[in-house]
Image 1 (cartoon, rainbow, N blue to C red):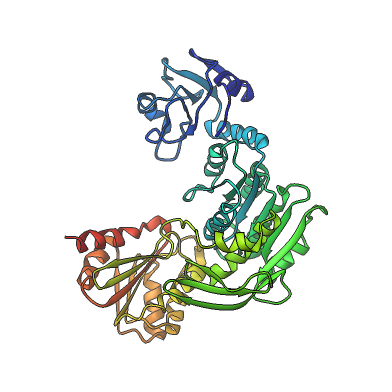
Image 2 (cartoon, rainbow, N blue to C red):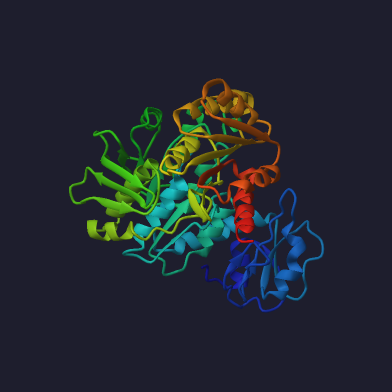
Length: 462
């Protein structure tokens, strides 16, 4: 974590500093007054609904020694050091830039429409086999989360994997220039956040902004099977010193998938690199084989042996709400509630096929961010359910009604039930807890459909 005196932090930010003990060193950063270590710096964030400045007394009680403070916010504390800034978010970002420039760690930056969190988790697991490695925790991949992650990196960190998300043009460029990755990865490009872009081509260009921050002599890794990505790469000015490698299913990639098998205990893969025998990974889904190959290329770039990589792949710590299998009595729940789009739904349904329960129930909620395309996108998801064995379809939300319509028109599903809320759906699903049943729960993060899995677990333990 950042190691700097309070007064030096103020000088770095060209900010006025008030209070006593300004020669003390900051021991940690927090943007949450409930999650503080003693001696840390509190950075209150003013959001649309919550203003972090309101929690300063809680932060002081929990042991902070200093706080950033927006100049236009009233009543700054008088019992700790206060660094007065125009914008606490920009202050957070500038402190992270300072800390990043001091770090000797090799950094892998990851972005993509799908797969970036899994790729982060896999890459970090592999690198940790040889190096002291840290990674983005949870979904801290925004203009606030990325600098917070950078500030959380220890001074003796040897490798870090930083996830970078985006909703609008220019965000990846900003984040990658903060992160300054030695290796940049694009996992995929898809119709995510299309409500903020005129076309998928513009989404691809925005993802390619990652190359602007890759260090001289660094490596750019991307999914080589995607013709759109290849086209945008050819049309993007990339520094000559940056090398390019690709992964995919086709043999013209730097590394490609030769064999794939999966069961409920994970996946087995063989790749084109002859230094590897069959690799076992404790995750589900063919898409994870692709993410694994991106991690392999990153590890090889950082000098890891095939044996170190193999061992690292056995120690993946997965971020929650992604293909989480929960067993309750005779019922299995495949809890995949972090996000939802047609690609991630298909990936979840492929895993759903692995379960051989007598009854298969799929719960799908609204997919957000598709503007005027929304009805057609949802209808086509329902239409494509005809490719899978589903006994019952439950939909949640207004847009998801079009999934139900697409399924009624095209899929052979015995029962289709529509609900307006997750609470209603959970009550309905309770009856399956003692049946030989598998339930897939999938929806956009905004809907928080993990509520269903949590309630079913609660009822199952009664």
